Length: 454
Image (tube, rainbow, N blue to C red; front, side, top):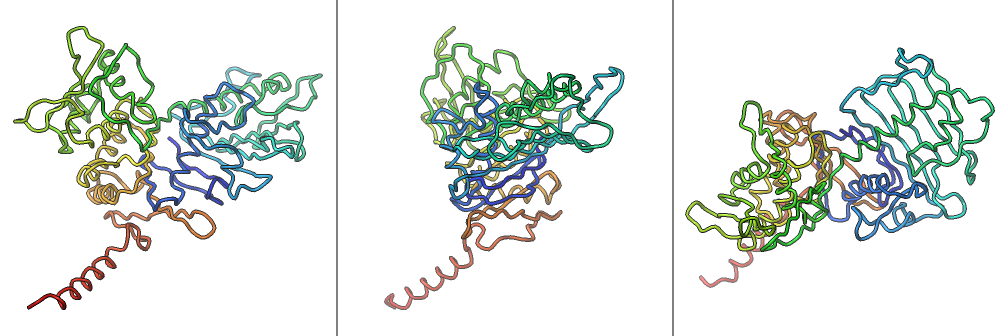
């Protein structure tokens, strides 16, 4: 789980020094306030790690990528030249990371369950992107790779902390070349230093963190009357939720079951999704069925009420198809995953938006996932506040933020939620000016009554 994120000079953000992330992190705010950019930063890092190009410092994406950010000049705040970008994050590991002393296999050099990564990069003078420094930090030690000079391609490896120093391999006193992408130590490090082998473990832990990141975008696919499935097992729902039926069928094929809570009967993914659709008041029943025996063509069949006929998903309200990928991803992604949701409430009734908060809490509680959600929904936020008040979730398990556009960029405000669910620093006009609307309506009504005949 990511516990803290900081960055500077990314898009409209000048600086976010230390943003706490919790099991449920909510980003709320007006349009063009910068909240989506926070998700885009994480997606940019993920797609860079997954890129096959080891020399590409950052992968900004294209129309087929998780996010398409254009170029480095497009993401640097103010589009300045030469631009610089900084980011750092802390996260907790699922298991203790132990580094063995290469000189004594029975001795542990470092042991930790928390790591930090930081990177500073920018244009190197010839309009090419280069890493200025990268650092991995444990609670008591840190390991850095720093570029020599402002425009060079030579780097220096160093460590901080008592009891450890890198030892050069005899006859290998050469400079270290540029990193791999933005986060990886070059292969030469392991040949130039006798005791640097463990650095690959830190790098692997960083890669594993982002392999657990799953994303669902705001614009989801229209429902289809028929779905073809050839046995594929997708990693996620797809950016637009287009692979949700594939995911449901692959989970069915491998016999996957989900625990809905302590001492409760385990459910299939379809059953868990159907249960939520019913609890949210959207439909009575839900299933994925082949159009004929042994067919690879399927239909999503729903029943609106116990008395109504069963129909395919295209013949009911649009909201069912829009929330379906959200529900499925929360229970399809492996336990311990990090799920990024962008406006999951689109096309949903206010009561369903409220219930969506309960879905997120259930997934976090029972599947140990972390959910970072970007939303405009007042109803979702209000339900989260209510669940803090009734002790379903604690203030520490939530991190809620208000993003707003200001004269010189974007501003992030952490919402202070007390034990009773109250937001003690509620921003002005957070979800519009309700009082102003009521006052204007009353004034208009009084004016209209004056001109109406007796």
